[in-house]
Amino acid sequence: MLIVYVCTAYGFCRRRLILRNCVSWAQQAVTRVKRFPMFALVILALLASMTLVNDAGAQIDLGLSGHTANSKWSRTYGAGQVRAVIQTSDGGYVFAGDARILKLTPFGNVVWDKYFTRGNPSIIDLSSIEETTDGGLIAAGGISVLKTDSNGNMLWSREYYKAHISSILQTSDGGYLVVGSNYLGFSPFGWLAKLDSSGNVTWQRSVSGSLEFLSGHQTSDGGYIVAGWISSGDVPYGVFGHAIVVKFDSEGTAVWQYAYGTNYVGGKVASSVRQTIDGGYIVQGHSLTDSLWLLRLDGLGAIVWENFYPGIYETLVEGQLSLTSDGGYVVAGHDRTGLILRLDSTGRIAWTTSLGGSGLDAAASVQQTSDGGYVMGGFDQSFRPGFSDMWVAKMDTRGRCCAAVTDQQGVNITQENAPMIRLSSGSVQDSNIQPIVASIQAISTSHPTLTQCSVPGSALFQNLT
Image (cartoon, rainbow, N blue to C red; front, side):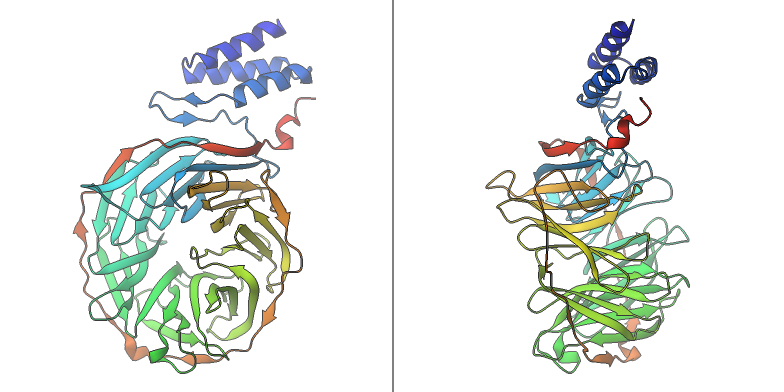
């Protein structure tokens, strides 16, 4: 009888009959052999090794590949670069980069792969993505914002000419905030705009002074915090520009704005900002020497601490800092490999790991996952020499992955007491960029998925003995 159930479950799924029946038979087979671990291991190994598709042709996951923090995998998804990766509410992942958005199962298998284009073949350069409250996605990059359903099908798209969008997020009222720059004159102005749920502009602001916003988030008081860089011609000190952080209220009025300089001839860029649990802010960026830089601010923009991490870089791709469940931070970067830093709330290094091979690899985005592990996205030039591929890796709670990983030892931290420069609120003004309904198409595509390694979570078999 055991053999019958094993063979029937495997045959049912292998022939790709009705998915509902496949899952049911698989579950029955596992249940009936739970007292016989060896048979259970055989069933799970067979099912987890298969690529199943639903009626729409999308790959599906039976949920047997492991959802615990011990599950680890590393995969590439064709040429390109992952700019942002997030975990979705169903436990899977979505990533965006170049003109593509891919939906993955919890174990990294492709559910769907969409290519976004205006035609002819004008592509959309996507750099930011979020899951929305309706289960769909909002993504942006270049001049474009696009809204999709949970399957990547287009719902609407807008283009904002003379703007360049760096990031987008959904706000608490169901609308969106976009930040970036506009080119209404000879030099870029920092630009942020509040959009309604259909992409129409509610209000927008420009900040003059040859600057660009790269990151923005809604704050606990309903306002917004944005960060970027400003050229040195508008502030004292340095010759290559400074990081800038601006706090806005919910209506787009600037509450405070500061540039953060340096004590030596050089400059800084702020590429990511988040509000911390105590109401302050954490800023990630880099210096003129490309070294990773973190700045901790209080709720009024005053410096709490400031750290450089020499030898760790982020300029190949602008990094995205994420908060962790214990009040710390996780940061993506590179040192010719994909580098992940886990920091405590004071900026001290808890651990660092380096993923990749002999080529030039980089991590662009990292996020703590619901199981306590981490997911990283970037690009890989080691696994397929001569190519630069989109790369996503799932790590355990210690940042370990099944691919080549080196624990980084002796990463230095250099502290600096840099000048903080208050900027004039008069530089904030209304802007007048109007959205145009775009004809962006979502085209299903397929690229080779190469598995560098995969290790199911050890908790997969915990109920079978």
